[in-house]
Amino acid sequence: MDVYDVIYQINSLFGPDRFKGFVRVTPPFRYFESKSGTDFYDFPGQVLPKAMRVVSRTDLSLETPAVEGKVVYKKHELFGELGKIFK
Image 1 (cartoon, rainbow, N blue to C red):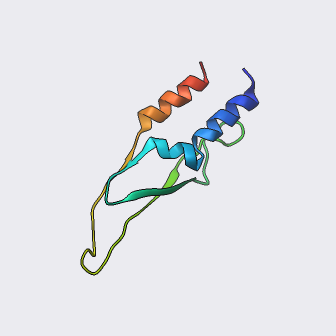
Image 2: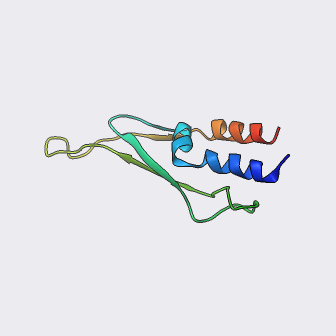
């Protein structure tokens, strides 16, 4: 197992394009972007962030000044992908 390949694969899971697959945003909101936090778990290369910032957006107007929605974090799916890296 090449440690640099493992670090690359883990890091790619937390990139914005890939991480959005582990988040579900309900309408009327839509996923906009995600960024890894600044604190990391003790792992070589600091690739396991302790938190991710997920930004979602919606349109509001005078007729619709507030709306509700959900952001669902698919933790088990992310852990499943992490597990595949170490097999």
